Amino acid sequence: VEGVAAMYWNFLQENMETDRMFTSYSSLLAQSNIVTPVELRRNMEDNNITSNVSFSLTPVSFARDTTITVTQQEIRQYYEAHKHQYQQIATRDIEYVVFPILPSTDDIALAQANIEKIYDEFVASDNLRQFLARNSDKPLDTYYYKKGELSSVSAALDSFAFSATTRDVLPTYKENDFFRAARIADIKQLPDSVFVHHILLQRSNKEEATKAADSLIAILKSAPGRFDELAVEFSADKNPNTLPGVLGWFDQQAYIPGMESVFEAPLEKVFTIETQYGLHLVKVSERTRLHKKVQLAVLVKEAVAGKETYQIIYSRANNLSTESKNLEEFNRVAIQNNLMIIPAPGITQDAKTVSGYQHMREMIRWAFEAKYGAVSPVISVDNKYFFVAALNGIHEKGIATLQEKQAEIESLLTMEKKMERSYQQIREELASHTSLESWAEATGRTISTQTGLAFGSMQQTDPKFAGAVSAAAEKTMYGPIKGEIGVYVFRVDERLDGAYYTENDALQNAAYFSGVQIQMVPVVLQESAKVEDNRARFF
Image 1 (cartoon, rainbow, N blue to C red):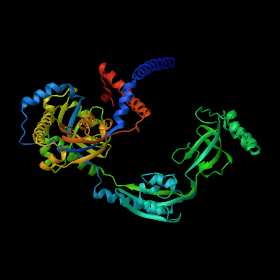
Image 2: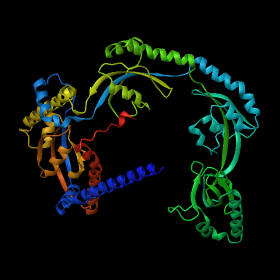
Image 3: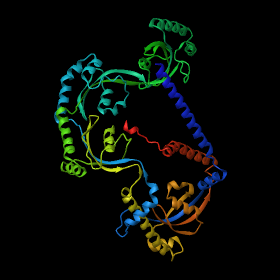
Image 4: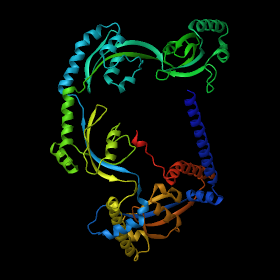
């Protein structure tokens, strides 16, 4: 034990030292990130000086254009000039087929027969808790529901619960793969929440605790206002984060197990409750409005896939896996059997989900261990699904290859050439026009307007357009200007100098970006120190 304690103490010391070092380092960076008066003034100007603009946009898209040719040499040159931008983490591309493990018609009929076999006994039972524990797929729910709360479980249950009496029974009905029958177990008028005070008595035996409780109750009968005072002196609950004797607001989803009776307790009455923590003197000082609440006993039988059904579904998945030796065969066999192939590109090594499916670590580990074109064995997930996957893409950590970025670069260069073509065309058109309106009318283009455009609001519009507008003189036509999404021709109709963006706004903005930078420190340090994160191998 001493050795374990020493190891733990050393661990704490090392952690504390590392934590203090990182805190000091982060503080150093935060304090050195100073906003100068010039930067502050510029930030305010960028957001307070706004322009009302008339403009025409000739959009340019990434769509393929047969009149534009991009050569392999151009793609390679662009890649070599920009490869530093193509750093990537290790990912895998897979495509997969999922086989849901669903009950057959026979399985559903069996579940129905099972619930009908015990329905009469359920109707007659005097001990619903015990009966459901023995016979139902779900035990008795002790929660007291108010009207509407059961709707998320079943609209039929909610409707029955608040229109029936304790003598009524909701006959068996089917919803999804569940067969249910229900009875009202109890009806009460209860609050949603109560404010609870307590004095926790922890003694060597129950007799001593009871004796102490009796003495305190006798004091409180004659002096009820001394509850908090006695809690300070006698309660074993010394939580420094709450007032003496205060447990706070409880509801049915957040309370100390064993204290269920507080929801029915009269206000200000002191009584005892025994829990795993000891004997409590309890008082309820406040409660919310009373509602009719119902405890419902629900007999549930779920239709699940039986052994035969399970084997049939597994056999279909296994056939796909064993008949597919590579990626091409995987696609061929899946199509022949009318199976839907789902693509899942860009899976990271530490991912836990794939296309919304949870608990997919086994398939992700397989993807990172397999070779390109490999087909997985049948992978079972949560006893709900079988998966068979094929690996159709491997992207290693580092700079992406030209082959990986080929299509992206070709699309980008195509857009650049289309942008240049539009730019030159508009430039030639503008040579014979002196106003935005005459050019637009002659070429059939539309003039739009935008008000309140500020340099600091680039996130709301094309940043290149916003930058050009901020530097332009009023009442003068400018263009063509290449933007992010097309070519602009514009005129600043009016420029306004406001004062709504204050120095305090600028300081808050600077503090926000400083916080973002601080959050990036661990990532930058990890990269610079070449730290390898291998947790995905074990989790």
